[in-house]
Image 1 (cartoon, one colour):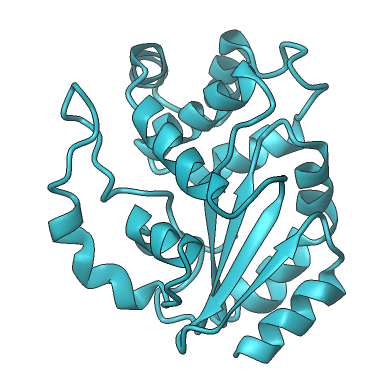
Image 2: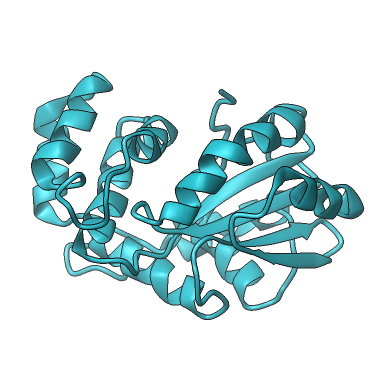
Length: 222
């Protein structure tokens, strides 16, 4: 698995979602200013710290997935298409990957999204993200209950006191809501993908499309 090199500020996703094409690296200079914008009562959460990027900041293409951890089609894409994208485009430095929360399938969706950012506090966002999809159960069946979210963290070797305190406090609820609002501006179903290159050219893909569809779009944007 490729290491997370830097955080993608939420401005990256916002800019792509509203149609302003730009690469991940072109937005790094905005982090300091955007991080001053507070959107939580506790002052612990700012819009400037968005989802971590998987891949190199110098990548030509950014892939933004808008998804729900309870979405069956998201898991299908995760199982069948994502591994080849990671291997052929992310690991090779051609693309980086961002996940934008769109929790629309029930309360467990929001809880799972919140838990990923609590794991991110311990630098395990992507490991936790993957565990959620690896162990996805039936929608709102309890597979992503608080107890299960705790067990996932335990299995990853996280500091449980820190993780449980983070999750119970709702520390990242505003971040998840903010992500969802931005995702809804262009996505009506999960998964939806926006793929953008350094020239500002972008393509939208809806659904768990096969690797060949993504390959064709990404190659055209390199």
